[in-house]
Amino acid sequence: YGAHYAETLRLWRERFTANRSVVTGLGFDTVFQRMWEFYLAYSEAGFRSGYLDVRQLLLTERTRP
Image 1: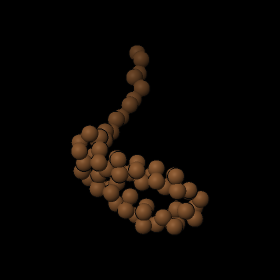
Image 2: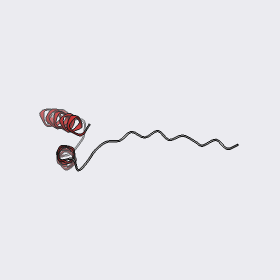
Image 3: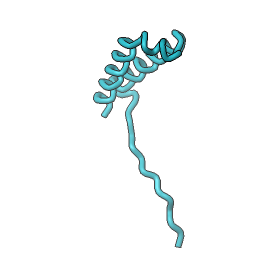
């Protein structure tokens, strides 16, 4: 899933930066915007390199006799 998630993050970052004026209008300052863009880029790189991956877990309560 890593390569697909990396592409998703790239698209999110691209759309985020393309809509910076909207984000500013929502009250997010430049510090937050830079931090979010860095997070998206960092995560994308992590998934592309294989350093990060996703997992899905299903936890259930064990029934007692």
